[in-house]
Each structure stands twice: as structure tokens, then as C-alpha cells.
Length: 233
Image (cartoon, rainbow, N blue to C red; front, side, top):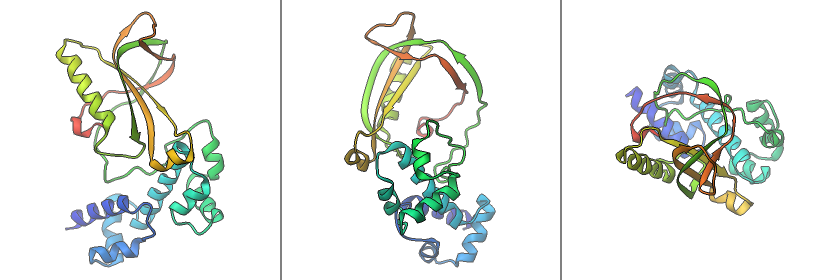
């Protein structure tokens, strides 16, 4: 029963990231005391449900700051903070910087964000770094408006799967993928919760042309992993 309840808590948190409900409301929905839930959840995940809920909400705020043009005031209201100042204090406590500085930073450090335990997959891989020259990929490109939040019905994943399978069946052994996302251009587009994403799946060629996608030179992280298609997102 403990495992079932902990899984329920994880789902409840994801469903209530932008609601004004709190851990007491969650406890009522389970029929168990808040103390019991805290003990069970802490044993399983190393933190209380309240801390996990707050970290997930602050992570949502971080994503909205980086991937949308929503005003900080609107993000604060979306997460039910009583004022801009209240939200700024909470976010600075979480990230170490103000919402404005976080949004304007040229780098995005993901290490402090709280990934969802509900969607977590146990995939082991070793990360190394490598330096690659500029390379050119020829293949089929696909563009669509896709959610910047996790979505099991991911249009890009569906496209990548179909194109990779097609290339494998045609005898292609080395398949390359390059992707690019474009941030929403205005507040209206930001409220829809989508980015414009373009992906090219194909093979390497030696010469650039109008039909090739360019992978710029630079330092990259490199890793290998294997998983089922339903685990790839």
C-alpha cells in the first residue's frame, strides 16, 4: 500500500503544480494522515511531500522563465504567490538568483531543478565530452508546435520513431539527428505552452547545401543508452 500511495502522491503533485492546493489537501484526498504520508514518502524519496511539491513548482517557474515570454508577475500569479516580492523570495531561495537574473542569464544550469519522480526512468549511461567539427546532415526535416512540458503524446518523438525505423529498413546504419527550438515570440504564444521545434533525421554528408542541416562545431556531451520507444522522450 505504501508504494501505491507514494505513486499517487507523485501523480497528485504533477496534476496540481499550478493549483492553490497544498499537502493538507493531498492528505485529505488519500484518507491518510499527513504524518503518515510524510513518513512513507520520505522513506521512498528522501524528502517530505511538501518539500517535493515546492521544488516541483519552483522548477515549473524556472521552465516558464526560460522557455516563455510570460511576465514574471503572471508566473507568480499562476503559481498562486501573493505578490511579486513573495515569489521572488521563494525563487531566490530555490535557485540562488532572482527571477529576472535567472531569465536573463545566457546559461541554463539544470542541476538545481527538481525532476519529476513520477516520470523517472532508470536508464544508465556514462557521459563523456568530445569536440566535433562542423558537420552537415541531409534528411527529412519536420517542424511542429510542441509542448515544452513533458507529454506522453509527443509529436516529435512520434516523428523521430517513424523516420528512424524507415531509415533502418532502407539499410542505413548510422543515423543522425539535429534539432532546434524557437521560443514563443509573444505573450499570447507563451500562454499556449508550446515551442516551435524543428528536427532533421538523416545521414552525414561532406558538403553543405540548401538541403542540409548544419551542426555547428564545439564541445559536446556524449553518451550511449538503450531503451524502449515508449521510454524515449
